[in-house]
Length: 247
Image (tube, rainbow, N blue to C red; front, side):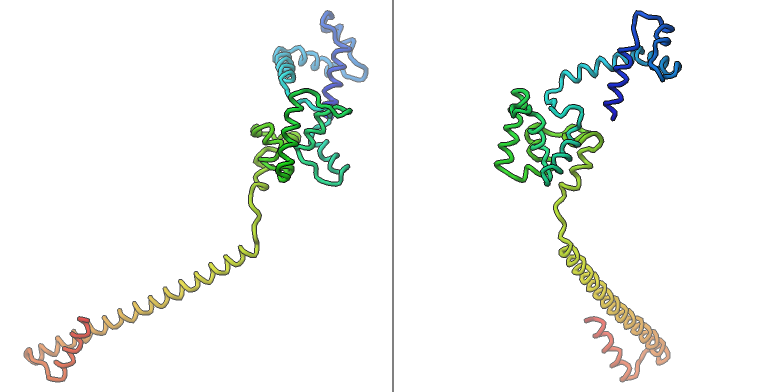
């Protein structure tokens, strides 16, 4: 649709505008059904130096295109979709490139297209996986790395990161992921249990230490009351505590 509108504008301008006329004369010769102010804006736009420079650059860019295809105004993305429906299977980028760079009687449109087409065929015969859309499919290997912002054969809009980011990731085994998560949970539970056991032991040791300190305080008081001498049974108990604390 965009190309059709572009071509229509070009035909209208070429058929109704003459550079030898004055602006007023060109406005009087505007196409039927187009308001005067719209035609005036269009003439000024086409005669703007920036517009002329852009048109000139676009012409030069088209001349530099090496791999023009035989699909006409139909994009390769649309042609790929139609060809896939026709054949009842997904048509790869490489296969479509070959189809759209041959004439109706089967020959390539030029020698460079033939070289690329034969390279694609060779790659797909050696490795059928190169028929599947990827960053390393037959077309990518034959033509080289994709340019940023576009993907060959996918039309306007899709970028390499959008097309290839998901397909380049290895498939995920859901069962393996769930098993790994289960084992991780069990391991975390075991670690938590061990931490609780360690905390209980530490609390028990702290309680014993506090108890010993309290006993020592009481004994110290008794020693003072007995003028420095302990009763035999208490002295024996004290020695036992000292030996326990030293081990």
